[in-house]
Length: 284
Image (cartoon, rainbow, N blue to C red; front, side, top):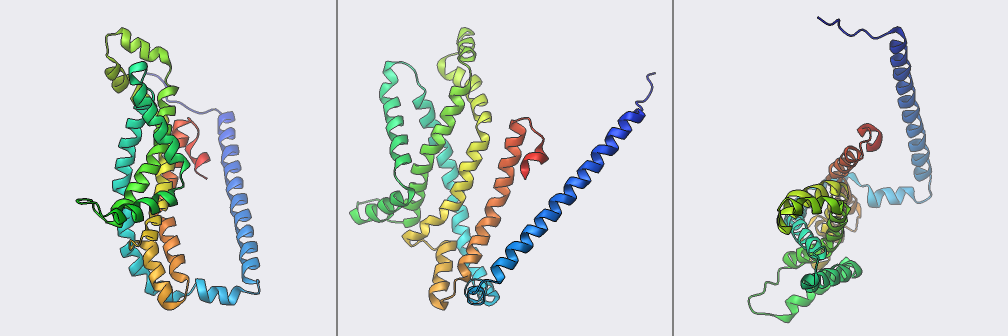
């Protein structure tokens, strides 16, 4: 039988040194953070306009009044995000595959994908929202819905799929051509080599930037409020218009921050794992 592992005295000394360094680093980070927070709070609260600012933006009374309506509006944002994310991933991957097709026969598909991505990456999202949300219902087309939520979601899908398509394309082109050639030499068709060899590696490599795009989508889902949809921001705007107090906007902002922080931390975690780096060192 082999003897149980027993660390040497030098190894034990190294571990004690590392634990001491870790405790010292944690203490220094906590101290500097507290000092910075104290300085910021002192600067803000000593400003001449702090009392009226606190009354207009940080009223506990209006925060309590606005929270239920903001949360009811947030339910619309959540549903919109889930549906749009599924559509964006499907459309973005389709466009990326079209853009990477080879041969002159596929030129029209490559041209369409290139024009699509250039067009919707160039037009501001706000303009796409206004054009679809206000322009299409104004045409009064038979059988076409005039729901502002639908057209707001369509604008988000069209714009974000252009960005996601480029992310997918970068992942596909990062796979070395020799792997695709090896798959074809084994008798796989072009579609089979893409499905079994290229796409699994490509998607795994671009997961962190994809999650970043989804974090941005979570925030931008609030832009449908400009079309009149009663989401979290519109609910805050209604209460603000009634009370002339801006605290509901602060409540809506905090709700969105609480919503995006888990996805942001997940993005950091996945990025750290993908890069083979220590997870705790990259989260903060």
